[in-house]
Picture 1 (cartoon, one colour):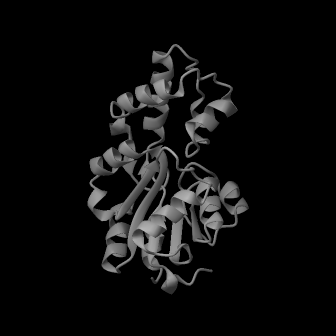
Picture 2 (cartoon, rainbow, N blue to C red):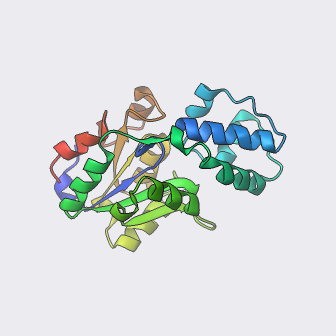
Picture 3 (cartoon, rainbow, N blue to C red):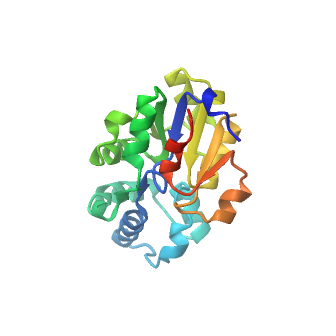
Length: 217
């Protein structure tokens, strides 16, 4: 069990943790592949189980040949907001972030989405003023499960990883936290099932985000 009295920073994943965005991601991906005349026969349930991974890894697992990854990303980013109304915040997001702010806990976001895309999404949901630091995918920066982006966030906020709790819905979030020597919290309402989360042995497992409010920081 976590001693929450030592936690001075909570780092959240985006998709499947703060925002229920599966339908948006699926539709934008499918339309982008179609635009590039690539395979668009994506099985939604299978695809949803991969959300959170880098697209390069997803396409490799799905055996989709991607001749120009940057061209795909450009198409995907241009179409994403065509489907943004299919996304919504999970229950309790605003309340939890306000609770952390009121308790002087720093808040960050760590996502495999591109930096500019991540910033646009949190602005869309009016979360930008509640988050102290946003780390999206950046050139030269490894992505989860590498500890590198989480350590960079901690350095920027001047909070050691040992005083950090990372909250996410995938194995990548939990592995990233462990690799950085941070505390880890797996959520059960996102894009992985209970068995997958439990298999990663996080320090804490919650069924709803607002369970964090019931804990003592």
